[in-house]
Image (cartoon, each protein chain N blue to C red):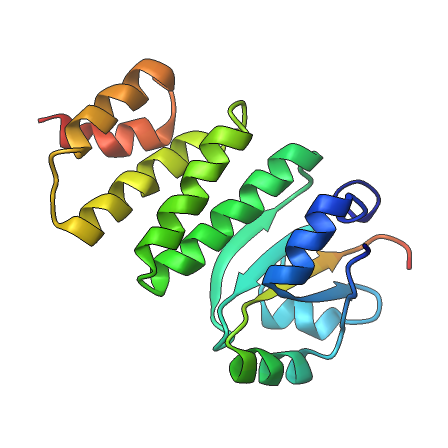
Length: 32
Length: 150
């Protein structure tokens, strides 16, 4: 299983509020 | 972090089950770095479901240490929600699964705090302080717990 990363912060914040699930934010400078 | 930790099946499953995972690269999402005061990479933040930052890990960590730190962050989220039994369970999991991790003294400390908060019984704090002193004499968590020793 791979992590299904999202990158839409506002959508994720809305999802978190609705689902009561916390968020993990990964910040990277690695080449895309 | 991507190549080592996130590709680990157990870590990937743990993240997928317990969090909404987002990734931001500085080249494409610089404003988000600024929004969350991210000064260095890799940085991992845990936010609660209301979007409040509750845990931060800055810099590279090898796989085992990274997993232990993620669990510590999850334990903190549970603690802040006053879900004492979950917080205690996760802190114990850190101690048992990652005995060499630098997260262990912190997990021991917070497990003690959780036990106190959930029972109002402080009798376990002094023995915990002694245990930390024996096992982790130089840890900042041992110093923080020293006040319990009386």
